[in-house]
Image 1 (cartoon, one colour):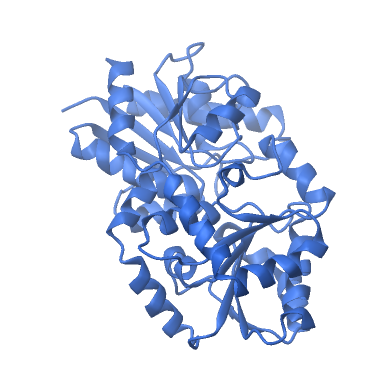
Image 2 (spheres, helix red, strand yellow):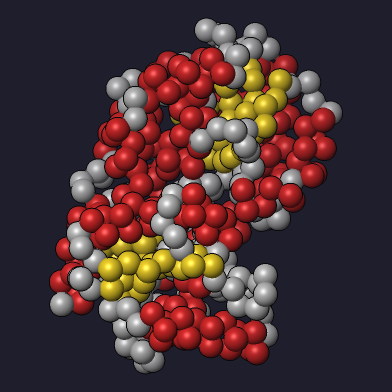
Length: 381
């Protein structure tokens, strides 16, 4: 049996990436253990990876960053027991952008100052290096070069660009066919336009404001003559907290479909003519779907209007303008009065979609899981 790797995840985006990394390590002869919590645990169970369920105390599986010292010490103690029981040759953790849980606890215990176990973390988004005290990994793995540029601001270890394991699987999808079938399920006519909204934490400052400005635009006379359906997908970790969002929609004359259940993310992303979000990683999913598609499948527009969302982004990620925009992959609204013209341009001008489609072809797609295995193997050898 090969070296023993302990994988952890508590965020759904992290779990979706780590799923492919785990399978690649398993296929290469490594011994695997998996511990997860929350929506990541449910996802990995469904994927047949048999994770153990992590808990700090009862149903509590993560702490706020302002948690008491006694609670943080309990998290550390629980994480320490897990590592000592499993005693892996290395730990490989997912990224969660808020609070402290299994990922942060394991990285803290594994660090050189404590158990001195080689540790790695996959960055499925840009600019965030969430860690407990000095509990950062030996190496970060990143999806693109933007992570290295932003790493100067927060990374406490080298950042290796490897690409995105999760998105390589998109090469096996018939994307144009998936788009056609999903649009048929949603009863979209040949000329119907589908705008998707993908929510994040509803309490994030500026999230609700940007949602309201988007809905007001779609509901306004600006889009008269464009038959437009709104597709809404709220984040699975917060789905019981969007009551204000739904109440606001109730007063609008918009053909709306809730796809928080019943469709895969890939189905609904492929179906959209316009994907909107403040900072959801589903926008990166769309860019990679476009990268592997044989024909254009729509455009992403980031909603970054108002100081609240910008301040939140800078505080939590180190930037407010999404890094992928620097490569021309997507559009963004910085001010709410830009939203109508941008939507009209994207939905009515074929060149807007074509330019986005061409820009996505620059995304890195080299075998990321193999590169990760090679680097980990070399490091722990």
